[in-house]
Length: 185
Image: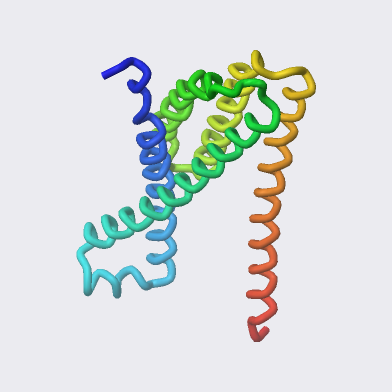
């Protein structure tokens, strides 16, 4: 086993841990809502309490795993696309430099295990991991970029992720408004 591959499993473990922490919070939220709505007792007639919790945790972990995996795929694509547009590196040496940045996500995903009680903390630690990784990425690849290339790379990522998040928020607001308009009030 070469030293180059020692951290190759960090992204998968980070995704699993972040999925677990978000799933644990969401599970407790859903169970609380089911109890308040009075549905939980009816569910216990068909499943045991542990069966409900484990099934819900498994399904939520699967959902968050798919979300984080898709985000990683999109992030990897934007990183490589930005390197194509703005970097002078044709060999891919810079990509090997940034692979060790997965330790940032690994460390902060482990820290998120202690914060499963509050969604704002979970979101904050995930956003912090993304921001710290972006700073690390820019620092590591700055050697192969001109000043204009560095500015272009930063703006490329900021504009892409801002547009991506705004599109998601817009879709959610549109869906919410259409749902509210369809209610017979």
